Length: 186
Image 1 (cartoon, one colour):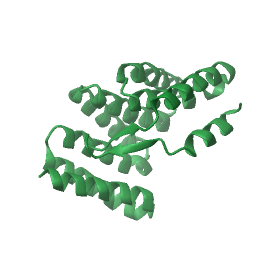
Image 2 (cartoon, rainbow, N blue to C red):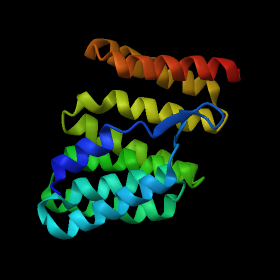
Image 3 (tube, one colour):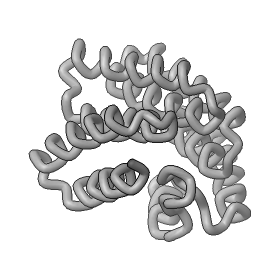
């Protein structure tokens, strides 16, 4: 199987959702399927050296969603190493956001905050403003989990403004859902 076929397969399944009972964390309806995909991605990574960054990112995200953040961090740290070796600031930024999420899932909120701050610094110093909304969204979720509801609302509002500018209805809906959710918590 090639990478594009694999990516198409995992994106066409509706097994991941945002859990309203757990601060809108990503969860899965089919943990066994995600575990199979992790194994497929591992195999693909041995066959496609140039695609390791992408595949390790997928593996890291799936481990996080399977509520195994320590395993997620192992793969995401490898992603970060690849991105730094390539000197690719965009990949570094994305990876710091993913690491921040995995740290949040493991309850390491201070380290998660640092990871998101590093992503913001990369965003600002490398003209990667197209990613700012993602950082605001994930930072808002972190604040929400920490009970910092005003800060969460502020982050989600900033994410929404940027997403409205992008005119991406799926992202706009996601942020509106987060804003409604944080209002319920107040």
